[in-house]
Length: 145
Ligand code: TYD
Image (cartoon, rainbow, N blue to C red; front, side, top):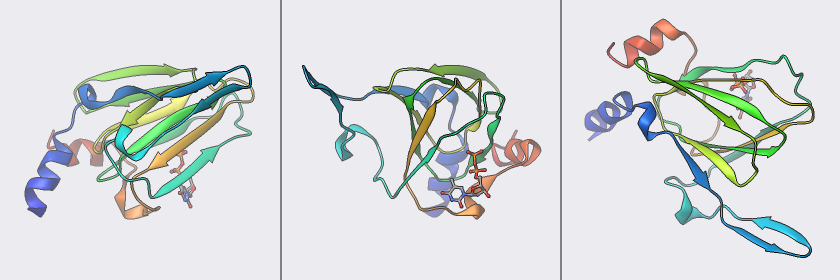
C-alpha cells in the first residue's frame, strides 16, 4: 500500500496539474467565490498566503513528495512554472476564480509577481520540511529520472 502510493506520487506528470475554476456567486454586491471539499481532490489542512511580494521575487524552487496544493491568485498576477522532470509548462495566474491544482511530485517556481499580488495556497497537509525536495538533482532522483 505504502509502496504503490509513493510509486504513484513519483510518476505524476504536468498533465495532472490543472486549472480549477472556482464556483462564484455574483450579484450587485460583488463576487463570492467558494472552494468546497468536493471541488478539489484533497482535504484542506493548511492555508497560507504570500503578500508584500517584491516584483523580482522568486519563490518555490522545490517539489513536494506527498502534498497537494491549490494556488489561488487572490489579487494581481504571477507565473507558476512547473516541471515533472521531463516536461515543463508555465501557468500565468491572474483571475481569483481560476486556481492551479498542483499534485505531488512536481517541481514549481513562482515569479513575475505584479504589484500588490496576493498568492493564497490551500494545502493537503500541515507544514512538514521532510516533504520538500529542494534540490533539482534530488528531484530527478525522486522521479527515477
Ligand atoms: P517555502 O515553502 O520555501 O516558500 P515558497 O515556496 O513560497 O518560496 O517556505 C519559506 C519559509 O517559510 C521556509 O523557511 C519554511 C517556512 N514555512 C513555514 O514555516 N510554514 C509554512 O506553511 C510554509 C509554506 C513555509
